[in-house]
Image (cartoon, rainbow, N blue to C red; front, side, top):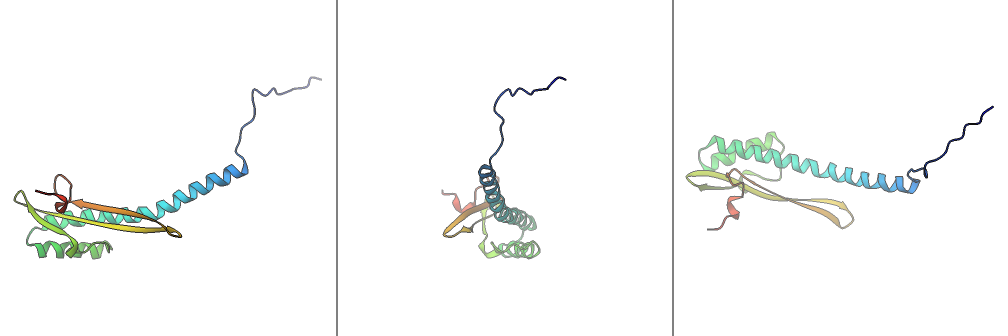
Length: 132
């Protein structure tokens, strides 16, 4: 009878228990961070859409603010209100800009600060940030 032997070409690899725990902790931290950041980014996208809608309505500054407030109440936007918008005339066209920050507590004294800004201007920069 012939005996089969397996010859190992090298050392077998794998992950140790401590390596697995460390990897899962890192993946968990990134997952929790993503769960906290994604809603703020979704709100930012909703604010951009509401600002574009407000600009499309045209009219006076107050009418644009009211249009934004209406969109904000439908889309559950609470970071920016119509009064926080910067509405200015640039190149014979009304442009709407906004800027705000969100502070996300992580653990203990550590937190994450996200700063969002947007504009309907073609350059994309907020109207308040431009200097002449």
